[in-house]
Image (cartoon, rainbow, N blue to C red; front, side):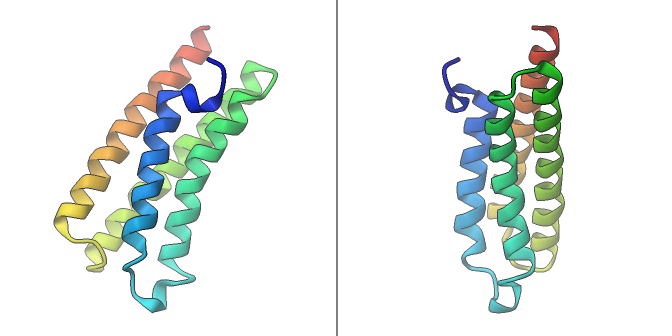
Length: 118
């Protein structure tokens, strides 16, 4: 792989983050500095940690960033569930996010396991 953009987990996370930005744009004004901001930051953290981990010189250091990416993904999962339960996301949008979150998590887990072996 030449760049972090070649990592499928990053690609899935990037797509997820774009959708998070799109859907949170319709959140109520009162969430501007609350859930909306937090969700966006967590989404950006998923892909940023993969990118940063990709350039680390040691496997141990890289894995630490990839694990942080997994943690940020869990944060997004929790926050999208909250957004749905608060009525900020309809069932269709929540399902779309949920499915992509799960897919991203599986691919990211696989990427991490491959780095441990390699």
